[in-house]
Image (spheres, rainbow, N blue to C red):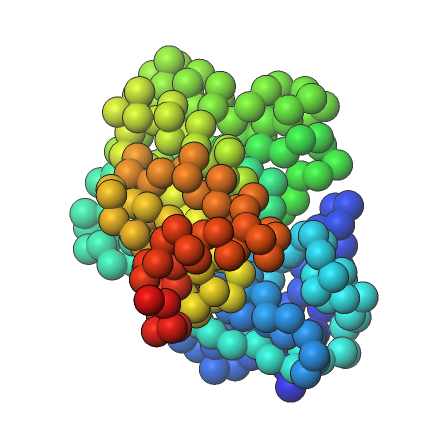
Length: 292
């Protein structure tokens, strides 16, 4: 059992929880995720790690209520317990693997959309701790849906807020801000984009035009988290990959976003899953071993 030390609502239907998980806190790195289960009958929910404190032995998660499982999670309070809290899973951010001196030479841009702000934050914070200040664009539909602004402002070199309705910060989509910053004279060696699939698709389209290599995190399409359900199957540079076991980070310019988003819609129904299994054959699942 894993004790919830803090639980609060950050914005409408978006919640933050700090969980006591000493072994995970000791080993996790930015970019990885955990799988949480409220009780013995609860569904397994993969969530990217938002923050961690190795000394306290805690891991922070942020989630949005989108179904029965996350709605049940939102009802939990400080002092309650999760049945399961498993991790760290997935591959750490690519930055973790790079020589620090080489990393310090790079100008880095992060683009976060909505709840995608949560998995962007630990990467920006990790870089800050290494003496590297990255630029960050955070986009939300409205000011009321903006999360972690204070935390991000403390970690980022420069923080640019955008809202679709113009209620706060810059008005418009994150892609317009990327273009504006480049036109203002900014140069970026790499961009990291995390958020809704449609946002990442158009960020990649923009950065490709601007010649900025881009990394995306495909955590939004993960369901099972072990490569066995087939939900996060995606084509990257013509090869079949699974976000939960091969990622969740990939070269955004090589991801087939249109195919991935179409699969997302089909996967929501039993009929759609049956069609996908028939069509994809042995590549439908990543590790179940049951596909012909």
